[in-house]
Image (cartoon, rainbow, N blue to C red; front, side, top):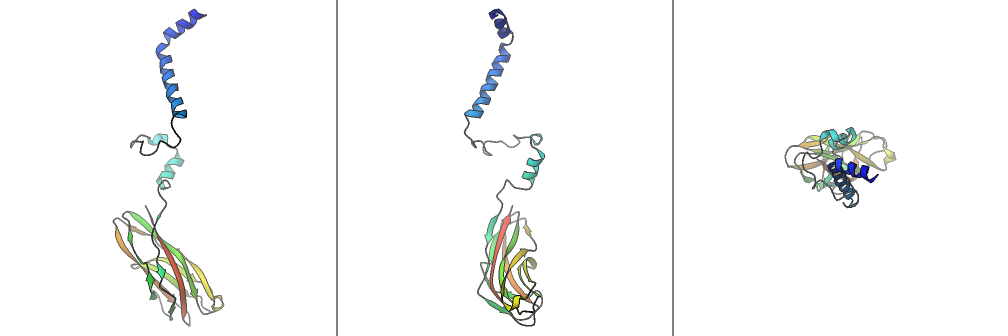
Length: 196
């Protein structure tokens, strides 16, 4: 029996040594490397070929889910309650604070927020809008008069801003009043977010 074992070891010495080294490295990786200690700093460009990634991994990376979601660039607010007489689009400009921000190069910006408006009870044709230049970026449409009481309305994104270089931007706040009487915009809070 020992004779057969010795013959086997002599014929397969190099293969057995290679197997021992391979298994030793794997066990070191499994038990000797701390959890989450290998990251992007330890990987060289091209270290993971495309063929090693699943379709799900590729879609995840294409959509940028591995990158930070967004950065808040500005938080424009209304500078006190303001009364708006009947007018037409693009409406009366409203005074605001924190309306200027710097857009990051090669990013897309979205603007959204909330506003509080009081309109006559029969009014359904008013809006509070945010512009950057001539581009409408966020809007809140009044769809009911709410018996003449204040109502809080979400300002949804209307368009995204894209730029190739860092650009100074200014958010312009406006109110369009298609009602028979005056409306009051008592609050307006926006968030400008930048996505890479």
